[in-house]
Length: 466
Image (tube, rainbow, N blue to C red):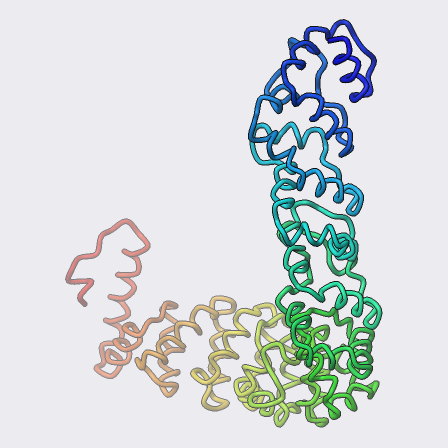
């Protein structure tokens, strides 16, 4: 027992204490005690908790020694060899608490055991490839082991990573920020494609591809993604695109007016831009925050805006001052029509009502057929002020329902003198009553119903029908 106690104390690096005599005696019952302590010392695992016989719980050395399954895992030659190589090659050590947690469930020690059973990881650690690959991305984290496994499976992955470092000056410790579940900004599918496709790889590492990459990186802040490998190679071989990107004006134009200029797909759009459109595209980006490629291109509706810009842009700028929500690309025809019928003069009067300005632009096709309609809207607003907003909206609903036409706007203005609520049914009946000579009777009845609606009286079925 004395020899056993001396050996335990030596392995644990502690002074012999008679207070722990009973504890030492209980440990001697396990023949695996000395081999386990030797393994812990070899792997750099600090002293396990053995302080007080009364504090022995499931998480101490006894609990490990009593678990045959765990002992078999830890004493496997593959585990000892693998854990030693992790310590030397990855500077990764199993901590005391990791080993203790192994006794009651999943732990990092258990993960090391699983990796030691994986032939891909065993070969990677034995050959030294695993430490070299991991060092490209910084420190090793056990919860990232699944990320490194496919890199180890791909035979030439280390060589490709080294070429990317040397020729493209890529810093994987910066772009490959370790996150749970993977490495950010690292597309494994694209990387494997680069490793496996020799034609792609040969073209990718040629000088003109590398020069093109450096240009788009320096000029537009492009961050390489392996998923772009094919696209980057194709673009670097495009003489027309290369010529356009060499032009400093085009480079500044892309940065100022293009949506997401840091992406290859956006940069490639420069080929589609007609020179005559550039000034207008710059205006849209600077004044209206509409970026080329973000929902529009230099065709279709944009062409219509280009043709009508002298009319549309001044009105669009005024509406922007009024904080009116509109889309200059989508609303070209409406803005054009609004400008042609002098709606801007009307907007000046209601600039404190941006919602109404926006409504008039969006519904200009319904509300305005000629300048008399603009004067009518002005008359409604002049007579009723802010209350005219609701009346104009009701008027638009009546027109859309087909209850009246703009030719009946006189009746609408007339009815608004007596009643400020408008609906298809009300205006239809009012026009009929006026034509039949019963206008006053209709208005009297309408006011009576309105008073009951706003009061506590109930409305009879006959009144509802009428």
